[in-house]
Amino acid sequence: MNTIAKRVTGIMTRASHNIQLQQERGIRVKVFSGDLEKALSSLQKKMVSSGMERLIKATQTHHIKNSEKKVLARKNLERRIKSIDFARKLQSILIKKVR
Image (cartoon, rainbow, N blue to C red; front, side, top):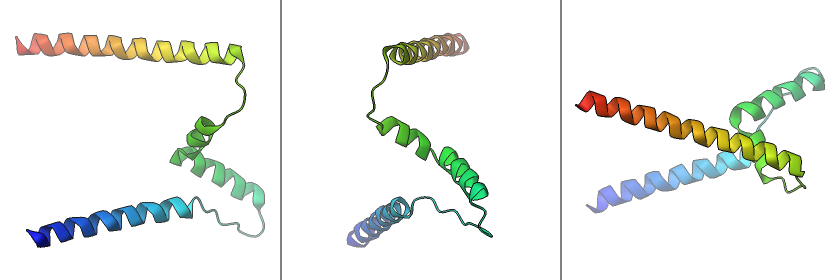
């Protein structure tokens, strides 16, 4: 039993260590022949694909205008309504299949 516990804790510590290394590394972009424009565009693509851009935007603490708040609230409401409608449709389909 102890050997299993040691293996699990070893795996967990290695996994957490790898996560820490990934967080410290960040995103790296190589610049070839001094072409900064190409490097910046590839950095932008990497940030979008990794979700880093969303995290940065989510943590920004600047002032949001009331009109922007209304737009965001409307979008969130529409998303929530769509998900509720989808859940109802899915539930009705599953109930019909069970009967």
